[in-house]
Image (cartoon, rainbow, N blue to C red; front, side):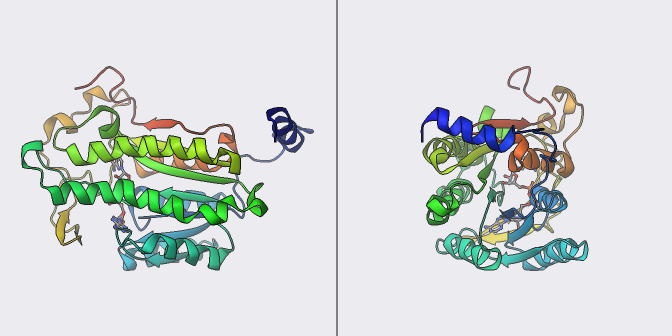
Length: 296
Ligand SMILES: NC(=O)c1ccc[n+]([C@@H]2O[C@H](COP(=O)([O-])OP(=O)(O)OC[C@H]3O[C@@H](n4cnc5c(N)ncnc54)[C@H](O)[C@@H]3O)[C@@H](O)[C@H]2O)c1
């Protein structure tokens, strides 16, 4: 379809009478699949998007917490279900995508959120630590997006709104001490997202990245030792030590505080809803302004 035809088509849809007669923050009936959504940013996003009318599929490694999140959503009258499983399992992404399509008939929005840090100074970083971080933040999103290709490239689904939201970090934009693995992977996801935005625009797919700064979740709180995962044979303990003084200093955050999961979810909604219908291939920073004045 030519550019002018596409414009006319959109204009007739959106700009016929009053383009704002409908609430463009609503995503009624949209199916949103969020990985790693049993807690933290993913869970808050599930909650906000459900309120805006979405049907939610939650994946997480932690089945008990995933079930709790779903119970909370269904008790509030929303449609939701969970598919527990380890995103690092190579065969799992297509199974997850198929499970959601089977349950809800379609997927409008994929949020590749599952993730963690596994820090070490560069000279001490092991291949195994480097590898698992590349896998969770790059291979897993790539496999998830690819698993959607048949569904999203189907001409019958051309008009259906479709979007990918990937999660980066200020570590990927600016680098971060102790995070040679995480900063490499979080920079990589930005290139991946732009490529999806280029290749799949013709299928009416938007793809964007959110780069978060310091959001208050278990991965940024001081480690208690209680929040542990064993993945790829390695024990991964959540948390950033209290003595990471430079990182915990908020003086370079113009808004003067860490972000909340509510702050984080707001950007996800913007990217998932029609308000962002002409936004693709971009990176939105949700950082309270951190690094605006340069690298620390
Ligand atoms: N919190 C921050 O400051 C911050 C900053 C930048 C980016 N991020 C990114 O945001 C995303 C969410 O992080 P969060 O802060 O909400 O952390 P979180 O630990 O609260 O939530 C992450 C969830 O992902 C799940 N998960 C991890 N590995 C998984 C796997 N292999 N399979 C399935 N589920 C898995 C965990 O069980 C957990 O429920 C991550 O990609 C993280 O890298 C967070």
